[in-house]
Structure formats: structure tokens, C-alpha cells
Length: 147
Image 1 (cartoon, rainbow, N blue to C red):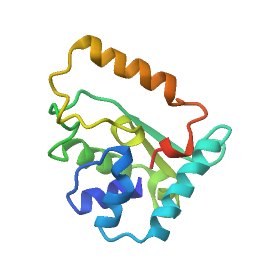
Image 2 (spheres, rainbow, N blue to C red):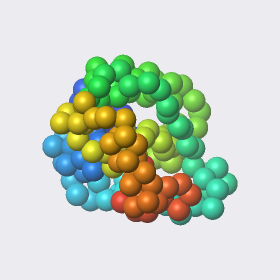
Image 3 (cartoon, helix red, strand yellow):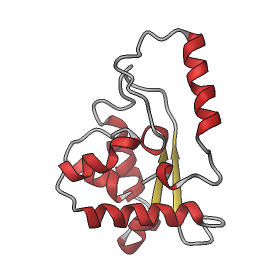
Image 4 (cartoon, rainbow, N blue to C red):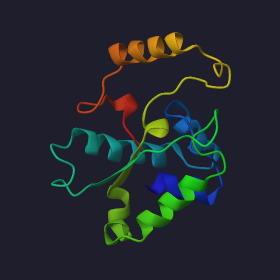
């Protein structure tokens, strides 16, 4: 959740999963700060049951607002941060224990700009290949852990 607040503060779009670290570095975060976020994310991924371990998990799902990005104008990011901040479980020290599953941010994404006119068969083949090569919840690997 703190990563989403940082993105909103800097008016930066939610990056693809594989671009998160580079985006945070561009926004001035140190490698140690980024590592701290990654370690927190790994902790929730390895938790038996997140709520018992003191984590709050928010899952976000909606139709994309453009072909190239799910939230090009930060509309959903702004609503999400505001909504989470209105809950007691997102205050103070607990804010670092709130995690958002946002598929675009949580799973590696291909570059959509050069693949906008993909045929349905090619698209379904892509996702079938992804299912075979990438683990899904539960047991998400470290590289795919949400921030």
C-alpha cells in the first residue's frame, strides 16, 4: 500500500510488475527502501493465512480504462488510496502491512503497445503459456509477489 501512495503522490501511473523497482528508483527511493518493501511482500506471500499474520489484503478488479494501461489518468489509483486510507487497518504502522493485489502491478506483463491488434487465438495462447511457466496463488514466487 505505501508504494501506491508514493505513486499517487508523484502522479505516476501504476507500473507493470517488472518495472516497479526501476520506477521506484526514478522516484528517488534507495535500494534499501525498495528491498524493505520487497521483504514485506515476501512475508505476506509466505504467510499461512494473511489475516492471522496481521496483514490486510485488498484485491482490485475492473475493466481497463484504455488499451495500453488499466489506469492511464490515475483515476482508480486515487480512489483506491483514498478508500484504503479511510479504514482503521491502514493507519500508522499497520499501513506497511496492507497489500493490494492489482494484477497489472502483481504479475509480470508483456508490452501491450506493440500487441494491441493481437488475434484471439494468439492472445489465448499467450495466457496458456503464462499459466504453464508462472506459478499462481497460492505459492506465488518471490519475483511475482505484489507490493
